[in-house]
Length: 156
Image 1: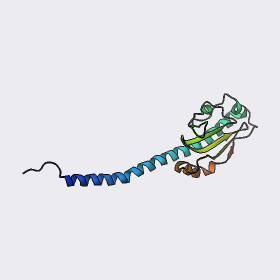
Image 2: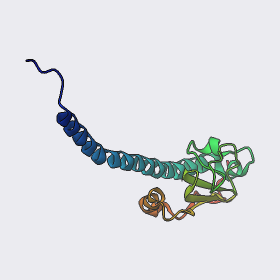
Image 3: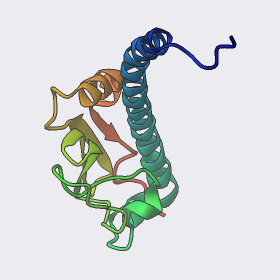
Image 4: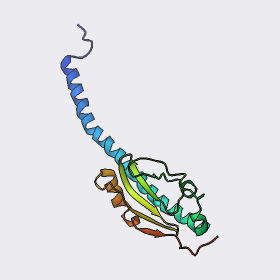
């Protein structure tokens, strides 16, 4: 007599093995997503400082202070106008403003304050306990300071 298919015990055994494999793989996928967020924010901070410095050096303080000089003209790094919401700041004047780098709607990792004199101060945001923000703040510790882009003496 030919036997077609699997017995119930064989099927249960396969399901148990698949369950064990899934329980090992799913936490790894969640950690990979967090690592990707952390890397993205780390790179964005470095890019923001470099872009702002380059813009200020090439355009001077007069252009930096103009109302027409918006975030989108200085950098493509996504900044938020609010610490508690992902409100786009790309059309906001750069000089003399406060911006935020958020991991998501409820996690404010870094605060960015600009002045009309060409300074940018990066400090820790309000979220110091979340996994992503905590790691970002550790990774970019050397950039959490006041950055001066040349002073008011640069005029174009």
